[in-house]
Amino acid sequence: MKLSKRAFATANGILWALAVFGATIYVLVKGGGNTLVLLQQFFWGYSVSFPGAILGLIYGFVWGFIFGWLFSALYNRFVKE
Image (tube, rainbow, N blue to C red; front, top):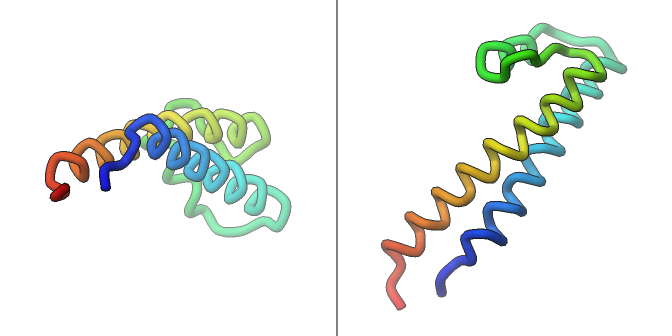
């Protein structure tokens, strides 16, 4: 069975967007370590703040979509019918 590239990439993008947003809001509310600060190296303009959470939501969707599309394309290439 082959995967729909668009559907898989969209679902993956949504999951990653919610994960980055949720983690940022959690650290912002509860306070915590400096682990999420490391995302600044990959996401230009990101910070552990509410605007940073919105930016992380966007970055998470874009990168999740790209990697989801690549994964499904590779999967479809190597799967047997």
